[in-house]
Length: 101
Image 1 (cartoon, rainbow, N blue to C red):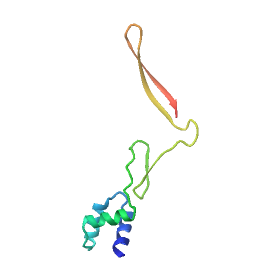
Image 2 (image 1 turned 30 degrees about the vertical axis):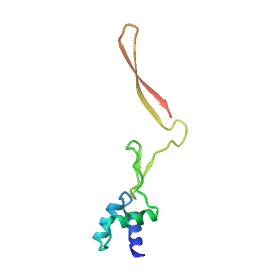
Image 3 (image 1 turned 180 degrees about the vertical axis):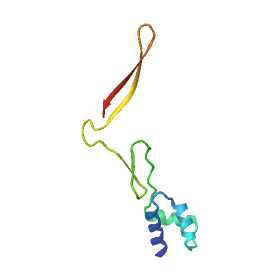
Image 4 (image 1 turned 45 degrees about the vertical axis):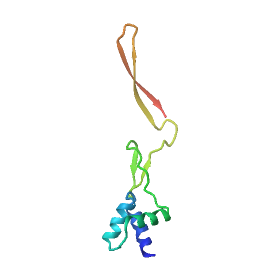
C-alpha cells in the first residue's frame, strides 16, 4: 500500500513528529486522509514517538533521537554538591563536596 509506505518513510525521516503532524504532511503531499485513519495505520505499524530525555547530559544524533552519556569506567563521572551545616554558635558553614558516581 503506497499510503503506508509514505507514512513509514515520513515517520522515519521526521522521528520527533507524531501521527497528527505526519497526517498533515501526507495531506500536503496530496493524500486524502484524515487523522483517524493515519492514527490507525500508525498503531498498526507499531510506530511511536520516542520520549524526550532530560536536557542534562544529552547527546543528540542527526536522526532526532537522543542518547544519554554513560560512565565508561569507575570514577569517570563526578558530581559536585554544596553541603550546608551550622556551627554550635549558629553560624552557617557551606562546603563543596565531590563524589564519584
